[in-house]
Image 1 (cartoon, rainbow, N blue to C red):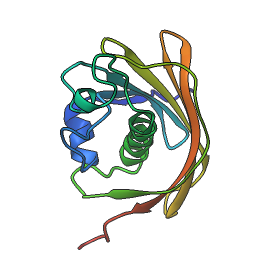
Image 2: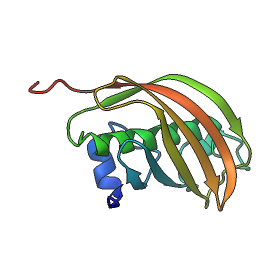
Image 3: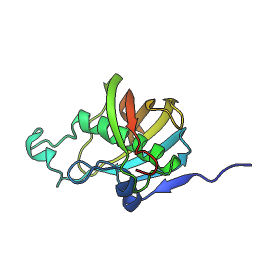
Length: 156
């Protein structure tokens, strides 16, 4: 029997992640399969503040923000699976490995981020994820990263 996959719109994302403009870098997360995998989307627009100073005249989304968007997608996946809405969960980068950039991401692109959990389980603090970011099926970036979940204490 297959379980229906979950999704998170922007309102749900803001109930899970503490990030806000200009650093909320994921617009929706779909195909959430527990803590195993999820697909996030970022609509890249010209009005984002990094385009003012990152290659003015040739706007390119900074690679570090692509990796951050992948990490935020992983955070939403875990937050939905562990029912962390409105609980002030925090997630901290611990490492970024095997990170490669393959294609420019520019205003007008829709960045699709496919995330998988490599290691981590409910109740665990340290998780490892693998992510691939694509635009129209073409790989833009890939990375593995570790994160520490700071879950609020029950009853606190």
